[in-house]
Length: 122
Image 1: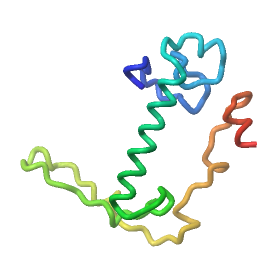
Image 2: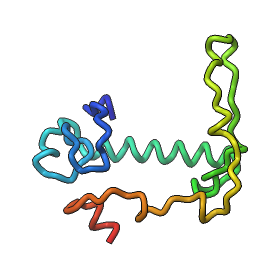
Image 3: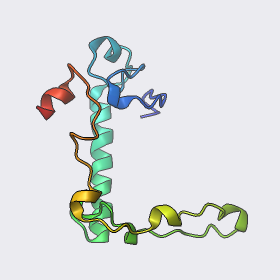
């Protein structure tokens, strides 16, 4: 996305992308110098790679790995000054059932009125 003009403003969810990469607003989309097909290809390739990684791990969907922190481990980078970040607090398994560890799309979604996104969710 950066190669296509994304400046990482991190407001993709708000329909206000200043370079038009991630918006349904026609005025903002006019600023995008790339083509929608290139963005579609990028997202398709990312999805395919995620599927390949999941398959190598023996899973069929992201739903099967959500909350599965036992699948993660911290690796050593070979030098003390590179290993000073302790990831154990985020790798710890939390006692929660499936309903508690999953996020509901409707609960944690920022409203984006008048977009293709909002129409699809309806």
